[in-house]
Image (cartoon, rainbow, N blue to C red; front, side, top):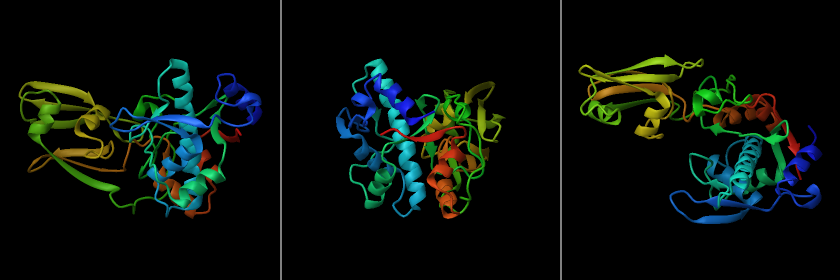
Length: 288
């Protein structure tokens, strides 16, 4: 697909200026934990996401890959908002993209170096999800996010075993696990009953007495807190405090691993090669 074809498709719904010369300069961002909506230049937003999502010390090619991913995902949300009439385009936070108002020279340079570049499949920008660390293999979009998208398929990741916190152990009191499962008392047993094709927990059972509650691992992670249960790549066993979860990776696991991207960049891969690796079948086009 050509950049001209993409520009024509987006111009039809008002994303591009007349003739497809440049992108609409504004994006409406709802700030995390607030009802405030900021009206920002798109490229200022992209630089702010790079600053919020990656350390400035990361390799330049990884920062550029993050800029293209952030811009592409933001455009999918902008298109959706225009279709539905939502008063903002995207929220700022860990459930979408972390936006930082003040950004480093490295973040600004990554946005400027990839100005107007969008990751696409067919006639559409892609939902370029990303996460911190996968430790081995990324997860499918369906398993991680309920998004069955052809470019969110498991791929081998870069070397990120030495990332601080990538291997972790968390203990949760039996009373807390029983409470989040709605058992009315302390959990007596917790076990993983099914796993995804990459080995991550898919479903669990939490039991007390003669009652057992089944729930998805993703639901349990949300109830406990995303930072408290860092990923779904875990095993669980009884412990002195209740139950211990031992695992690896940080984040949902779908799309680009940010530390994996840094590893690939250090190995000499360009940002386009990094994006092609993590989002198979997509291409980068210069939209404006």
